[in-house]
Length: 105
Image (cartoon, rainbow, N blue to C red; front, side, top):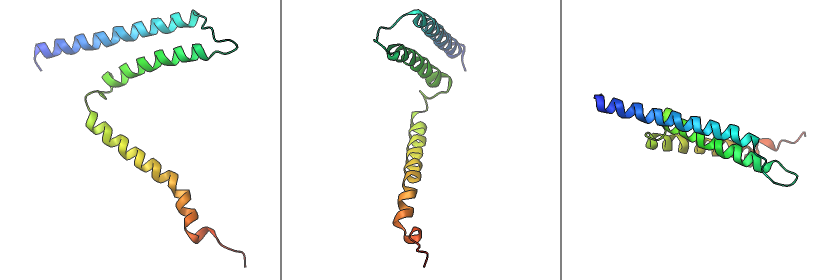
């Protein structure tokens, strides 16, 4: 790795760190703001989850390298959806099979 590449990586991760600090400051500031939704805290929950989602994306995309490994991530997600669907259909397949229709006599 050349010195230029290393400098680029340091600048990139420093910028991510600064964005996360700014996001943390927004989170603290948002806790002092009264979001006016009559009789509900849904406005505050929405803003809190929005800030948390942005910060989670920054961490996952950069520190977990999800931004650069797109093809592998898509295959893993596709495989997960397949097995999830299979697990959801197991009870249906069980009922379609006549093994569950035993009579006592």
